[in-house]
Image (cartoon, rainbow, N blue to C red):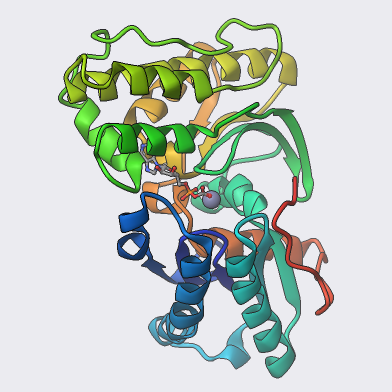
Length: 327
Ligand code: KG4
Ligand code: ZN
């Protein structure tokens, strides 16, 4: 079984071909960093226009790389939300058009489900249920993944997402956009104990995350400490918050097969190392997809589509695009 996946919900345009036995035949991606960099963040209108230009050539390139044609594809999976609505519409409508023209079933995939199931593409042994820390630019959640289409949200952020905090910190430190990788590089040269920063909600009885106070403290520290020390201290604070909240969720979740991390921030080495140590402490397997599968891509959408297709969950051609769509 061969699935074509399309992703266009934020600032990456992507197309991928993935089989139900976990072979990624092609995954193509066009970032828009240069287009958004002057604005210090993603501009929705610019993103939507860039998706229109980039998507069709990426699909053609993916098909060529895999050596297949649309006729060989069994179903078409497209992100239907949540995300910037203009971009979501570009990918979803393209998916609908291809599905209609080629007479293939459509799979309208929730972007978060793409992230949530991506670890199963990377690791065939990963079984349900698992505890997932989903940390990206738009989301920071702890999910109990019980099966395909069965997600229980145990915690979410009450203000900023973790990736958003990385991006805002990068902006405050003059590191540009996107911020996560730049902050991680700067942090490597800094002292994580140099700047006293808050750990919002650490030790709290409620399950959620909060990063707005940490970001404000970073802004106040600028000019009083070395940039690298602020980056390192910020990253250490984020890691402590993520670990504290994940430890709490593990205690509340009941038995799970593994501790899993996904989403763009899962590409961060300090985050991965700390989660791995927590899993070890709890005698749990730790699963983290490779970096390219953590940040936005279409292979995870194709894979979530493959899992949904196998479960008989196809969608009608009038399925809506959604800016907001909780799992
Ligand atoms: O999953 P993703 O590609 O897009 C969303 O769905 O949001 O995540 C992007 C986020 C951005 O905030 C980016 O700064 C962050 O992931 N990120 C990182 C790293 N690489 C990407 N954050 C920390 N360290 C990294 N190495
Ligand atoms: Zn994402």
